[in-house]
Image (cartoon, rainbow, N blue to C red; front, top):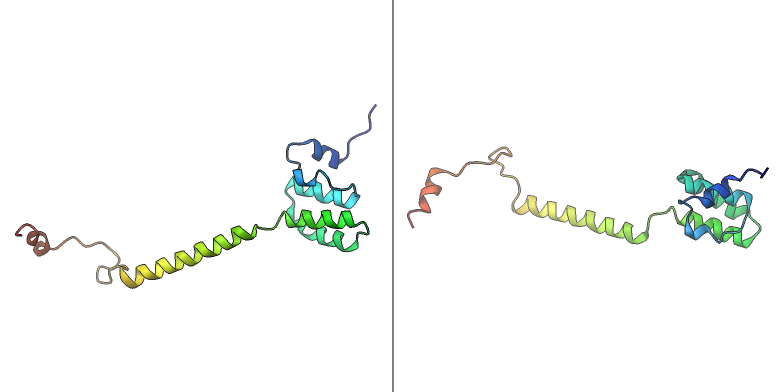
Amino acid sequence: MSEPKSAYDLAREGLGFPRFAQGFPRDEELDALVVAYVKGDYLTVRNGAPALAAKASDPEVVLAAKKLRAHIDADPTAKLLFLVTAALLLFLTGWWVAHDGPDQGAGGRLRAPSASSATSGSEK
């Protein structure tokens, strides 16, 4: 009878195993963090990876823990694009309110054109 596979081995054989983690050194705590990453438990990775990097003696394990932690952070380009989009939305909203904003007299409702404006166009 074959011995049961570890959670790491099962995760490695699954479809969700990250390609960047395939070259990581085998370490019990690092393996547990990789399994947590595969399962989507990013809080465990967020808390455990820096702790492992601080106490590990093997420099490869330290580098792997830092790399694993970096993969759950938002992409810096995505952060920048989000901020630019938010700034553009605020600017355009301010521009609309200042130049073409909601009609104050109608209480936010659209008004039907008056009779004088409707006939003035046909008289020309």
